Length: 137
Image (cartoon, rainbow, N blue to C red):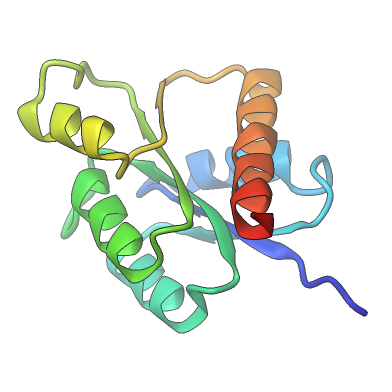
């Protein structure tokens, strides 16, 4: 029996951020492959085509065409089991949509930038493990 690597998607409109996160995660967490997108619309298309293979989506909040909140909502509608992390350098805790999505479980974890690499790795590992536990129930 072969175990397919679960996909961790990283979406941020800044190329250096997606590369930094990919370097931090890939090869440090077993059983995952990492895909990066700088365009949230392209990321959503990839997710639609591979939704059963994703374990986690990490998205920046502020992006052109589709912000992180709406992206994660669309992703959750396509696969309610996938885990989600929203990342932002901006203060969003007072935002009503953000609060609603946290309450509804659309966002599993919020992380403020800048993110220490070891901490990011730990949080990704925890979310992937939570996904695997949910799938094994």
